[in-house]
Image (tube, rainbow, N blue to C red; front, side, top):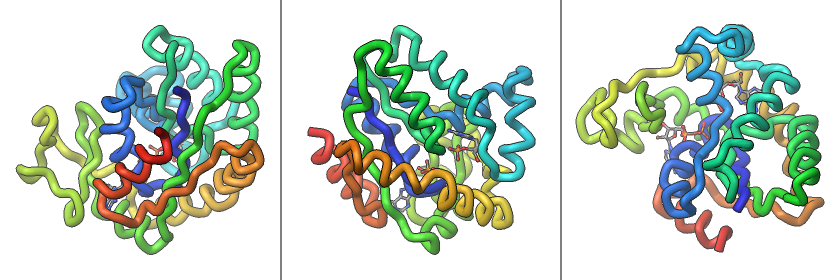
Length: 213
Ligand code: ADP
Ligand code: AMP
């Protein structure tokens, strides 16, 4: 199954994908994670993406689409995947549809995780992420068992530079202007289900599973 988790930064896409991918036995592909991995390896792609990420802007579509199409062409994605953070513009959505069409494939479901801006700001300002496996935690609403340490693999938790308030404001503006139009795009394709993301993590997960099944 090819699933897109759509939602603003901080909506809980990564949190939900971490368990959904086990349930569906499909890889969790997050373009933000791919860019951060490229950056930590110092590749040309990572260095190109860095200035956009630092400002909270979108990395140009051509670079992003190329990276994503290369990732979904790998064997572990042959039977499907969960996309998180892609597409983020109409051009990216159209490029994905085109690429899938050439293999007689389509996106099966788009799940919109809907959260108000006040809550997004609260979540991003308290977010901590595992340096090793990228699992997100929240200082108040989803803390790790041991402070500063990932429950899954003991990795060190850190706060992303782009989660600071100025950059968050910019990222939410970018979401409103460039990504939110995808709600209409996928509604027109009759594959979008909206989920109330402002519930307990387990309740959001149950709603997502109900929408998938
Ligand atoms: P995204 O991947 O959409 O940017 P994350 O999954 O990283 O969002 O979640 C953002 C922050 O909100 C994290 O700190 C996470 O622990 C927290 N969070 C995620 N889902 C919920 C929820 N349902 N209720 C409260 N906090 C949540
Ligand atoms: P995320 O981890 O999803 O919050 O993404 C972090 C940053 O990576 C974003 O603010 C963008 O700069 C960049 N990025 C991630 N995904 C995309 C995408 N699909 N298109 C353009 N830029 C992206």
